[in-house]
Image (cartoon, rainbow, N blue to C red; front, side, top):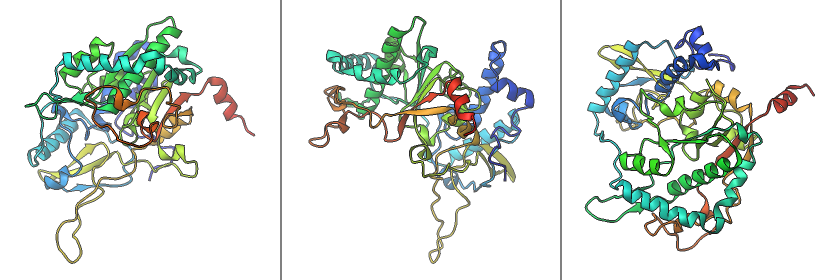
Length: 402
């Protein structure tokens, strides 16, 4: 078993490639970007393989491809292009053996409809300056002047037409509010600094109308697909990274921790950071093997099942396999988070001034008839926190004995 200080890169990169990946040499930016794509492809292989297909958790069970997981596989093996090709063959085999829709994301709305929803909702959101309370988030970042871009991952689609045969539109209140909150923070920061602030977003559910609508409002939508990973190559030491609600069980920080230290991060925090009595989670297995054509093939990424299917005692049938419930965590992630302070609990953030997210648009998804009016203004998950990179002075202070 590797020591607690063991990084997850293993043998996948040569020593020189690791230096480039973790370095800050602007002359080697293209080389570094290629390495970031390789890294992100490995860590997100199960989530976003080619053809935009995302396998369900039990795909290997249904595809009769028994998976063997060694819980000590915390480091990536050396994976060549041919290794990735074989791994893709296995995933294609799994895809062919199960019922899975492979069609691209489709909301059923036009770009004009989405623009109208965003503009109407933004008028409600900003009326009488009610969104100004969100400026406290930027003001909580001492080194905000170092930010030159926002990279948002997983804000999700704004609205859908669940039945394409009707005109009825369902506006997704939390996702809409998250987009509006980002726009408020960007607008405020642009008023504080003299340099350009870019706004990027990536989400696997954005269809073409979403991309067009968001582009018209100042977002640049990045290609998050396997082989491109533009949202990861965009992240650097001058980024504010935002992933309000999906991050805890995704690979975002484990990937970013290998090559960048964003100025600030809004993230779905690991449980041990919120409750200090909890110990850090154990490093997650980051590769496993499946039997394919009478040979074992290495599949990068966190395993989707714990072990081979087992027989149910007294019945004889196969037990359903469940994916691991722990968040995805690596030693590099923990080392990175040591360099940040948790400065704000965004779930407990004072939202009194904000618009109720269920009142942003007439076609909103759900309107509670009763309940806590303040909770109806929340647009983040309970674990969402603001992480701010420690200044060099604070890092030195914390490192002093006594």
